[in-house]
Image 1 (tube, helix red, strand yellow):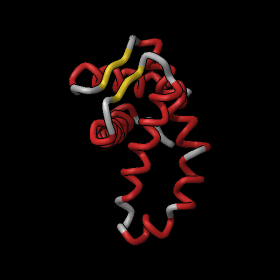
Image 2: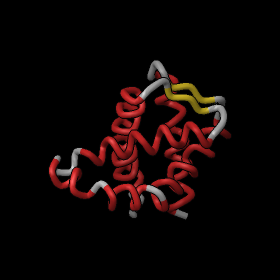
Image 3: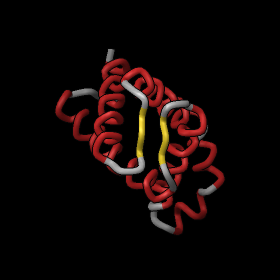
Length: 114
């Protein structure tokens, strides 16, 4: 049940961010649900591999390189999901940071645990 809540919350946050952020466009709620699922799957399967191979850079930057990896996951998601567009790396970077912060806040408010 927690997974379903997290997917719906993420989809709603993606819709809100797409509405307020210039450079981010999404076709509708169904596309936002697909984006939430794809981002989740990318974070489960692809992100750990990228983190492993970039571990020296991540350690050298004290973990800040993980923000770059999150932006790359958003850009990869735009390539996979039709109807979801992000204009560039900086926009994807800001989108991923704001999305992560808002997800954390919503998880605290709703009491959803990992």
